[in-house]
Length: 294
Image 1 (spheres, rainbow, N blue to C red):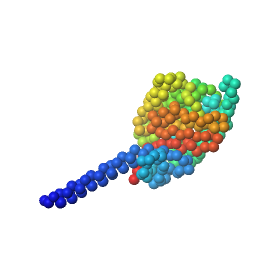
Image 2: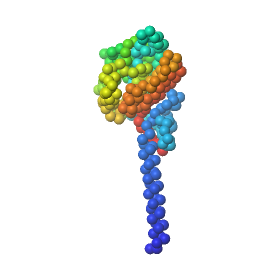
Image 3: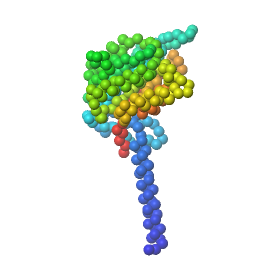
Image 4: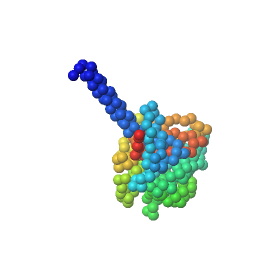
């Protein structure tokens, strides 16, 4: 075989190898893109709809999710801060306006999400709030245990009546909220065992935790990460924790919440920030798996 012919075969093989590596690289990039819904106006329930992955320089593939699969239930659980910083309060001699003193932002955020997706019969909703030294479910069964529901009237009543009657007061017990979420998921699995269900948790807060174990200078954030890890590992690959930090520029300067950021990172979700004076659609921070890229 001549030298020229050997060279042609050699270069042809090199070209095929490069093309193969290029395909593998692109496939890996696509499969690593987690779906983070960023705009409540995006209807993510259609069968072949494109969604916006988290912004990044390597997000070059078009990805979408098929939510029409009725075998996969999606259960949304809102963990809502009802601490005293939501209302006008005084610290020392300084007066601080509340971040959401009429509950308008939190209520409208819930309603905009639920109204859009409540007609999807594979979606269910649950609610809990945390304040002072405790957390309590808002949508409950006859034994006062937190449950999930797709009954639109019951869900709406929970938002418009039960939630609005709450008095914002006291501290911000993150740990109690995480513990109650764990109890609700455990109970739901006992009553409705399923490997297909996905639990999407959305924790909404305007402040840092009041739990001493999370405020320790040395191990505080680590303790919080471990508690989140224990929560999502109840059902590996089926529980995701997203977090939203809301603030009001009229009452204070915005500072990023490192605790909520760490929770979303550990929980496989997304961290978002919202100005409660304007943004009422930020709750579309939900990440649910099943990303398909092409």
